[in-house]
Image (cartoon, rainbow, N blue to C red; front, side, top):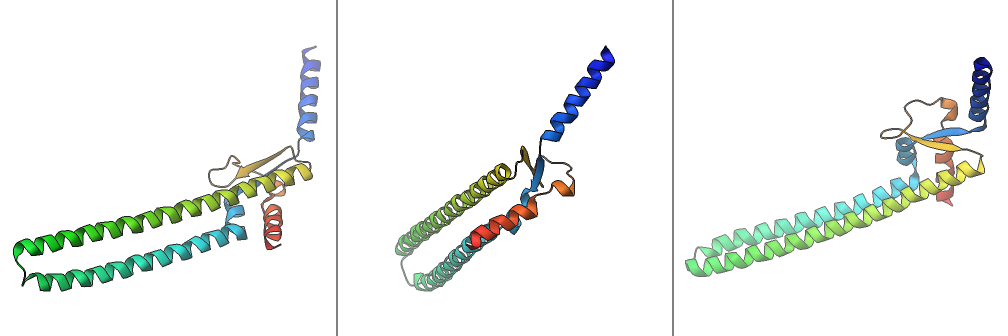
Length: 169
């Protein structure tokens, strides 16, 4: 009787495993190869480069102004020089805060856009899974839940091609 139950349980287990269609996607490779993600990163890198150049330009101009002031301050009274220097410090602090706000705003915009890309990728994977009869599509790669998967179950390149083809259009 025990042998029959074990045989029935094993048969049921094998049958249920055969019904599930499972694949996985290497998240890192998928995102690294997705053109929209590459474009978003490029766009925000360009904006960050422009902001860095602006910061450098402002810094150089302020350094020049500070050196000019130091020369001029030698002919001023100590009180007047301290007042002028205090005003320059306030201006420098204000400019630094403005640049920092621009940087935070840029980072926030970039993160929002990248979150949108990730959401789009997840929806495409879900749609692909439904359209192709998958019970599960697991996430692999760094931080993923797939520690091993047969290459025949790796859907990364198929889904990457689908995403990039849709993005081109």
